[in-house]
Amino acid sequence: MDQFVSTFTNKIDTKGRVSVPVSFRTVLAKDGLDGIYCYPSLDAPALDAGGQRLIDKINHLVEDLAPYSDERDQLATALFGTSEILSIDQDGRTILPERLREHAGITSHITFVGLGEKFQLWEPKRFEMHLAESRNKVRDLRKLLGAGRRGSGGPEGARE
Amino acid sequence: MDQFVSTFTNKIDTKGRVSVPVSFRTVLAKDGLDGIYCYPSLDAPALDAGGQRLIDKINHLVEDLAPYSDERDQLATALFGTSEILSIDQDGRTILPERLREHAGITSHITFVGLGEKFQLWEPKRFEMHLAESRNKVRDLRKLLGAGRRGSGGPEGARE
DNA sequence: GCACATTCCATTGACGCCCATAAAATCCCA
DNA sequence: TGGGATTTTATGGGCGTCAATGGAATGTGC
Image (cartoon, rainbow over all chains, first blue to last red; front, side, top):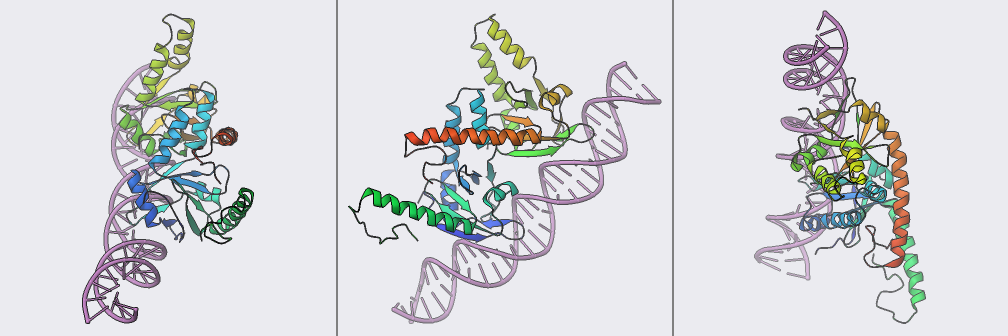
């Protein structure tokens, strides 16, 4: 498996440590990064995270702009400037800096959400609402696509 | 890691010393420069900084211009004429010359901002505003990109 | 002598490393 | 198939190390 899938909710201990789900750790290791590349999501109260592949993608984005141009610096500022490379200790735990926790409203628990090539970190309650919204959107989308194919899952097509 | 990532805000003590974030020092050392190459940013009230790789890049930039052309002299003056190579003491601290501090409006605290191949030095308050602007720009930029192609989108993957 | 810069040392708080425990998943064998 | 044994994961806590910072000691030029 080389993709981030499923969701997990773990606890933050008194020292600010959280266990990273083992399946995510496996994907990261295969990806060739000893840690988690993580930054505030631009359009959600959540954190985006991933491994080397995600870093490479962002590098390409920045490198496509003219050297020493204003735009390039701004893009690099918004992406690299707000990013962290979180270390993972030998028990598979990491520590989120205050700045990142704040952006996502995370206090005592964290929900890890697999999105395939990357994953997100959410405050559990917020993620519940976000998930409900997402499902509704998917439902609407399916209506538009037409009742043509009915797949297998019932009205709750999205996974649990 | 061989890139400047994340931001750090450190204090300037009564003697003008500032600790350079350890992760930045590591990158500089790997880059093969015992110090910080630093000059006033051309289009921001900040300082640009980096290691050997940055020096090489700027050399190429200048060399690509016609010899004895006005542009070449101007660029060389603007960059090299205002540059400094800051030394790093054995406790990982450096001292910013008055001229550089003035350009960035730096007084008691300094924010180190990783931009990948280089980094910037900002007065903390100013950087806050600059970051907000940058994030807005990138959001707009992404909307433009996102409208076009769907699968490979930006770093945020078009979906949400 | 003094002003300034550089080197060295001390403190503090954060982080990494190690071990312990409990719960859960997996395996094994009857 | 079921129940117990083993492994693995999630979590908690102790402790040593290191980074950031402050201050003293030493050096250098005027």
